[in-house]
Image (cartoon, rainbow, N blue to C red; front, top):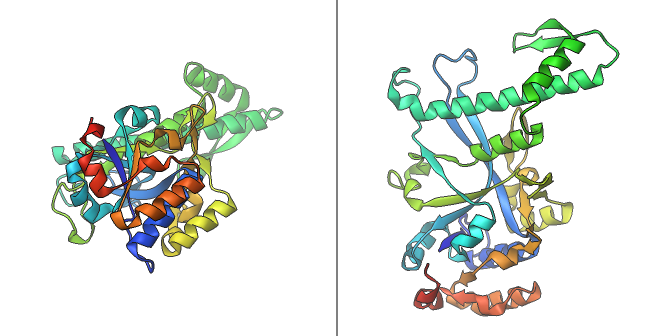
Length: 324
C-alpha cells in the first residue's frame, strides 16, 4: 500500500494534537500540495555566471510505498498519522514515481559524467524558459496588431531588436501549430520538475546516504489540467487561516517564487475532487495512534468520512487483508 504520513514538524502542540488538526484539515479541505525548492549547482560553463544554482520550484503531495510492517519505523521520521491508498487509487489521482538524481558539487570536473544527471535539470529549466519566451512573444504579437514593428528585449543584456509583427506572427504560427497550448506545456514541465529529487539529500546529517531514495516515493503534482480544468485549486482566505493555525511558523515563512518572494501559504493548493469523486473516496484507511482513535473517529464523522475506515496502528498491522 501507499502512505502519506504526518505530522513531521514539531511545534508548540503535542504531536497527537497536531496530527488530529492536520487530519481534520485533510477531511475538510482535501489533500494539500505544498511547494518546495530544490537547488542544483549551475553548469560551470553556463553563460549566466551570476546564477550559482538552478532552482526547481516543486508543488506536490508525497506518498511512500511501504509494507504495513514497516510503517512504525517510517513513522519515527514522518509522523504517526497515515493516509493509506491502494495502487489503483493513486494511479487515478495521477501519482507518478519520483526520479532521484545525484547532486554534484560545482568543484568537480565539468566534463565528468558525474554531471550527467544534473544536465537533465539544466535542460528542463531551459525548456521552461523557452516556453515562457514563446508565450511572451505570442502576447506581443496579439497586443500590437496595428504596429508594423516592435522592440523586443534580447536575452539578459538589456539590448533590444526590432521585429516585424507580421513576420513574428507567421514564425509563431509555424512553431506552435502542432503543439499543445502554452498552459498545458508549461504545466507539464512544472509537473516534471516536481518529480525530481536529490538522491544524496541529507538534512542536518539526519539520515544516512540514500535515505530518501529508499523511500519508494510517489507524488501527486500541482499544475495539472484535465480538459482545460486545473486539478488543484488555490486556497481561499478561510482555508489559509485554518492551516496557519496548525503551523503558523511553517506556512508564513518566505518562499522564493521565481524572482519574487511570498509567503509559502500563498503557493499551496488543494485537490478536492477528481473524476467527480471526493478525495475521501480514494483513501483506503486512515491509521492513527491507538490513544487518538476515538477522537479521530469523531472528526471523521463530522466530515462524513466512514468511521470504520479509521483504525489504530495495531489494528492496521493485524489486518493483512489490506496488503496488496
